[in-house]
Image 1 (cartoon, rainbow, N blue to C red):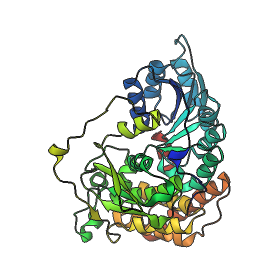
Image 2 (image 1 turned 90 degrees about the vertical axis):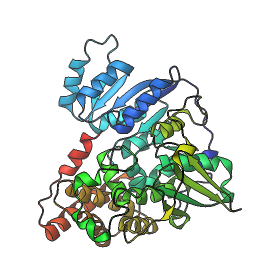
Image 3 (image 1 turned 135 degrees about the horizontal axis):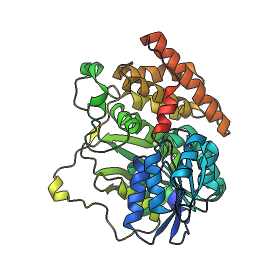
Image 4 (image 1 turned 120 degrees about the vertical axis):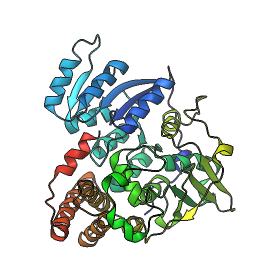
Length: 421
């Protein structure tokens, strides 16, 4: 499933002067808030010109007052009306938009030259594509965009000869390591995973996992969807597909190791046998800062790594019997086309039902496998192909859960996802 890159992303030139003009899609979410903290820590380097969020009006208002953007967007017209009233006393009031059109305007029509895509799910795929088509640099913190629409994003970036800058710690690590070599010298990538909270549990005990247990990640503080996907390791399965699209590789060239300490964020092996790893504390501010300032490195360290205090670093094979979602993600990667969109949609529905207590933990993978088997992957040529596959897979997942577990599943998952912007 290689993407149509002719160069590695690190070989595309980036020529953006400072201060850089930043727009954030998903400013009130975890990554969005961390991005704003990084910007505050580097005064004079950035101007926040646009913010898009979902329904967290109180936090968005505070962000707008603090950073004085020219454009903000919220989920719907009613929220936009309230936000206008809240910001009416600002000396420079931002333009307030809403809905998909507002998201697209923040990404493609604002004066930003660097867009941070941190909206959960495929809701901002159209906006991300519009940003690339408008010649803006795109920093991706959203796994689902590449999993569902990776070929479209990779093609749009390659057409402009622009890199896609990863904010995921694993792909940021790979991006950094690849600066030491050329594409022709690359042998494989090695993604690391903490293994989640259940890496040492007996397999038979997994049927009794409760939602609150699945959200106790051993090393990272993340949003609910990503944390649960880290427990099933679907998060790492998604990252395999992301790596293929970002770096133009086949699925078989990307391996996964369990690394409980979460300090070596990923490794790159070159064909002479040399293996390079990027190490840093488990702090998302570090890959965010790398993406915002690339190709420069700023003399500001969000966190310091003390290897002597850490002690040993361990690496283990990822067992696909324990983590069947890894196998399913690889299957989708080999299939290609809309299989990634089907995988993501089925996972989102199954994960939401587990969190509501309507589905057992092992049944998340069972549901995804059933949907992948039921819906044939089709060629992926345009945005509508992604959206159609997404809708079909969501309905198939809901039907499977009702038939096999007797749950009443509605379309509420999409609304819940928007709450996390």
